[in-house]
Structure formats: structure tokens, C-alpha cells
Image 1 (cartoon, helix red, strand yellow):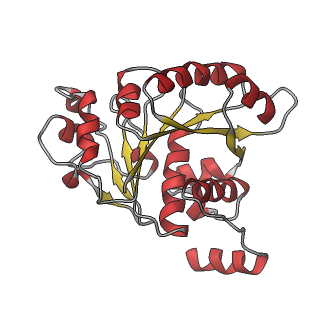
Image 2 (cartoon, one colour):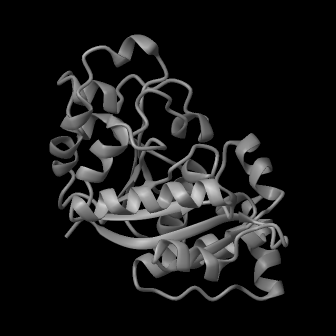
Amino acid sequence: MTRIISIVSGKGGVGKTTLTINIGSALATEYKTDVTVVDCNISTSHLGLYLGMYYSPITINKVLTGEATIDESIYQHFTGMKIIPASLSLKDLSGVDVFGLKNAIKNLQGKTDIVLLDAAPGLGRETLSAIKASDEVLFVTTPFVPAIMDIIKMKRLVEEMDVKINGIVLNMVRKEKYEVTKDEVEKLTELPVISTIPEDRNVPKSLSAKAPIVVLYPNSPASIELKSLAAMLIGEYYEPKNILARFVEKFKFW
């Protein structure tokens, strides 16, 4: 059965899209999972840009206006994951019914193992449509009070919509004294922090290269944690490779 997981955040800039791309890449490359990633941030789409997809003739926009089917909007990424981008053009916002997303996504049932919905940040219509289309939700936040308080608001909303909450990913963690700790986040939100992704200088490098960090820098601190998170989502366990295996893997990639 296809699992539909929306990845949401209360604020922009917490690394939600980067996280979505890398979970999808890790599932496809490490665990041979058939995964489809959908850009549900219709008005300010970034997912395609992060992957170097500057133009896609058929996008989720055309699916939501009835001009194309969901199958026609799928693009194959070199990692093995499938991508359904949103349009970068303002004119493609015309006539889009974001609440038609649930019916559109239903057509992926049985055709892929996991659908990851990269939701828009905040509590707007686009975010609500992604949550409504989901079976499960994964929250993303940084270790600072404003971003965490937004998660508390979103948690109440998701509970009212009767969608399963997998937990929180605490992103861009530096372990500084001024940051909110994992235990404090769990007390404030009453939700488990299932992954802590460290601040990693290789993340902006991978974004610049338009490639997921789990592929470009597979043994960096963030990559190791992202692979572990991907494994957890499908009930697997990730074992980091030894030094020799890391060297061979890096040589083969380049």
C-alpha cells in the first residue's frame, strides 16, 4: 500500500525542501524504495530549482487545472526517485485548485511505495491541502522558540484533521547553549524528536551543485543522519560505512 507523507514546517527557511529531497534520495539509493516527491508549494515552488529542473512542461499545476494527469507530470531523477515539480511561472497559478491535490495524489496509489509531499510553510491553503492529502505528517523545525511554537499550532490542526504525526525533525542543530535542546522541544510540543540533523557546511555546497547531499557527500554528518531518518521511516536500520567503504563510494561517485 502506498504511504503518503507530508513534510511540513511552521516557517520557511528551516530546510524542509532540502530534507524532503534528501529523504527521497536516501530511500531510492540506499533502500531501493520506489518514492515519488511532489512539490506542493504551488505559489513559491523551490523543489525543482534545488534539483536543477528549471523548466518542466507538465507540472502539478497542470494536474490541478485538469490539463494533464498525475502520471504525465512525473520526471525521473538520476537518484531513482520520481519528481512531480510545481511550475515556476506565475501564469500557471491561474485556475489552480489546491484542494484538488488529494484526489490527484490518490491516482498514485499502488504505483509507488511512498509519496513525499513537500508542503508550503505555514498554515495557508497550500499547506492544508497537502496535509489533507496525507496519511502521515513529519514536522521540521530549527532549535529556536518561534519555529517550535509554530509546530505546536500545527500539531493541533493536524490532530483535528485526524492525520498521523510521525514526529519532529530538528534541523540545522549546532549544539550551542542558546539553542533549544531536544528534550526541551519534546516537552514543549509533546511530540518525539525522531531525528536531529546537524548544521553541515556541505548542505549549501550540495544545493549549489543541484544534487542531494546524501549522494554528493554521502559520509558527511548531515548525510549520515538523513540516511538514518529515511531508514527509520520504513522500519530499517542504517549502519554507517567504514573508512575504506567510504573512500570507494566517493571514488565511484566522482
